[in-house]
Length: 113
Length: 114
Image 1 (tube, rainbow over the protein chains, first blue to last red):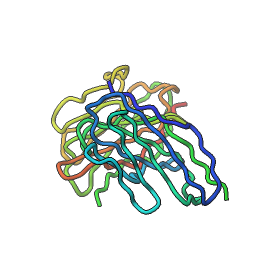
Image 2 (image 1 turned 180 degrees about the vertical axis):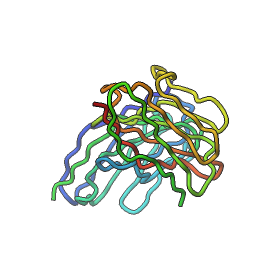
Image 3 (image 1 turned 60 degrees about the horizontal axis):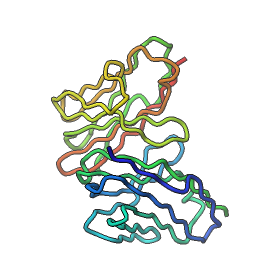
Image 4 (image 1 turned 120 degrees about the horizontal axis):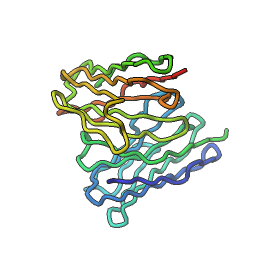
């Protein structure tokens, strides 16, 4: 089955710096790749997603890139703020946004003021 | 936007008892419900997928007789943890999808078995 690896497991940056989190997936049939932000004890919140027909997507300070050949995708957060501190999960799905999501192992991002 | 209501938000039960968790889609028809379990500082692990009116499909390693899933209507799905034990203590969270709605997570249930 699908396997999603995520790195790093923890990431500490200074406020204003950029943060990059990387994921690789195993199933070449995967076609939908969302990123979620989860605060302690809360539900995951979708922050950005990308489909396999697109190589890059940006939304203000957040961007995601996808390399289908290498089967990896990355989350980029620029101008980080303390409120960006949370656990971030990548995920992959074969059937688009309504099929089961397989999640990465998570990255704990700490933005130091 | 789409909303999934999950109850209870937390529950403490005695070992050997059963606990039922409900997820309701409030403003859309949830044709599919996914149930996840998340242990502390770990990822969300998919337990099962249920389509309305059908039996749930369980992921490898998940005991279907222990984690009973019912999805009898397009707005309600339940997960019952039967004969709960301390190792079942975890954060359980549902996510619903519909024809026009992608993943919508419930608020999660913190289960503690004592």
